[in-house]
Length: 91
Image 1 (cartoon, one colour):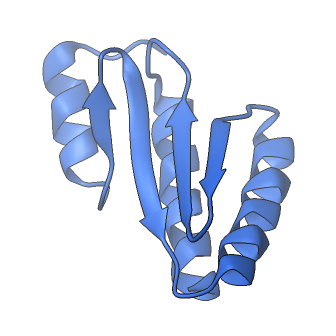
Image 2: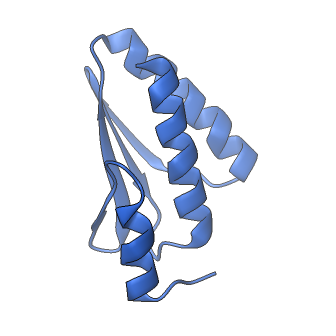
């Protein structure tokens, strides 16, 4: 379901670390070790399969960037929340 700009901004404000870049929801995750970032990406993959909705993932040594699709919907916001929970468990 499509959100209004006001609803979208309000919801993004509740998601730690996430921001809107153009029409994509983006978050950069930083890890103390390379393998922790890789373990996080494995969790992201599992979550993404459950949602049947997959982010763009960039791995740059100890940094992982997730970009969720254009035209952010409620599904993207729920998924972003789950990614944040996975981050807390793996960092």
